[in-house]
Image (cartoon, rainbow, N blue to C red; front, side):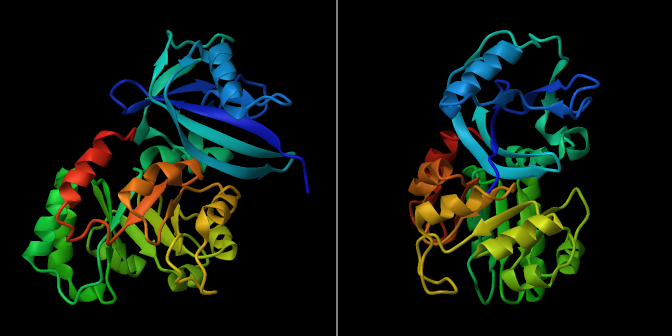
Length: 328
């Protein structure tokens, strides 16, 4: 097994939370000309978070305050193997500037392009764009106005990413149209757990592939600009998802024993699996809003929720409390 170079990066957010600080690599250097997130190598025996604070001060004059783990993963370039630890920094001090003569810029998160960054940064950029909560609709025979009303209330409480999940999604065009419109009006995005063709036809923001559709896919089924997500249960499925260019995954079962081998993953195994893939991954399976911080500490993008939200009398208040405290 190769010795991986340990790298720390900081996603430094502006006060509004819609822009991040980037710096341009010097021409002639390794990956010269690309934009990058500030950070650098961890010294021998140096704690990763301490290395992050040192690197950001040395590079861009930032004193790191409050920060949250965003994503950690292995990545192999032809000439070296790296392990990245990335934090989202929402509390900092200093006048951000390139202390080593590099060009710096505040860039809109929505405008970040993978073509402008080193290849290892694709998953980081997706992680910047994705919220910590992924709300999944329940399996229902029908989706009457009351269900759409519930969704609108959850969106108003701060939900930004929704998956429509039904065994017969093609039978619910009317409800999907209303849900998609509700998400658009709330600045949220709706993915459909169905075929990519159907997701495109109903105007969804993307498709969520179940594990069967994921295994059948030999390439990314939708173009850049549309979300492609997938449900995974083991490392083989995660590696296949990354290989075909999926933007993010849901890994289950974290807590409920419904996996292929009849056992739940648990946090230790979950963390080991997600740390190997350069892709944002949500935890699913018995998740509750109170699990969010623990999920993030174990390498998750966040949590995917079903039963802890839908038709719970206290769901709206709990969602508001949770999303108001998030560094999105």
